[in-house]
Image (cartoon, rainbow, N blue to C red; front, top):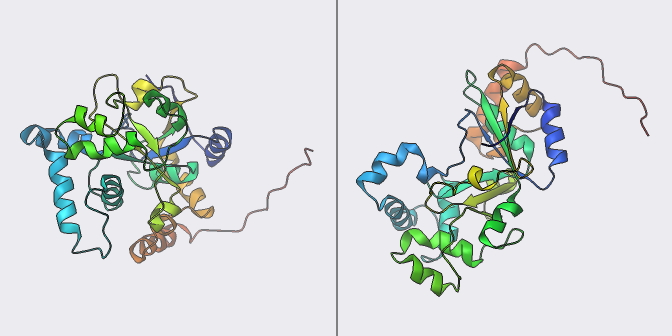
Length: 274
């Protein structure tokens, strides 16, 4: 079981981010205690049973119909780019979003579900990739990534592994930095893990058992509003993470609800600790 602690204050998040400097972070507004990408979550469990080709169905239909909405779609066989595009627009995929900025992850943990505890995860991606025989964070053309992105559209995984010159079929999630083709990816300091079909013992919490590699923090519901206000003061808000007019409207409405009682406090002072 992943070691779990409690995060109460913005100072705790800053200490976390400046201590685990090579880690990635992910925030949930509810304490799910799992790290599953969209396509493998419980909400699709019945549908996956009814149609085992669900993942392939979603990908192929998205590819076919997306051309009406974008002028320069990826090449049809560029499976990795299609997955990044689908994830960017809310389709369920085998990608899981992470960020290299702990404050951004904290924002996603406190932005809604105010009546429930949230959670924040911290993961060391390089140690995750070691389980696939890789070191560091390889480029988007890496054969393991190519396999995991192509697998839903291929009916023979052993043959696919041979085509990509892989010694075996990748079994574990894999951490990758995406090409920054979308402004949102830049604003959110985005990173991803890509997941094969899950099996018992093969999830991220199963693999990374040392708390230096994976740790979880509960965000108490009573602290959510104070933390969100602190994040807003630091420039982490809806329209800076989702740069569009809809998000700007949400930021302004939130500010209207919570900025009217402001009174200038005394500025902080510090002793010289050099």
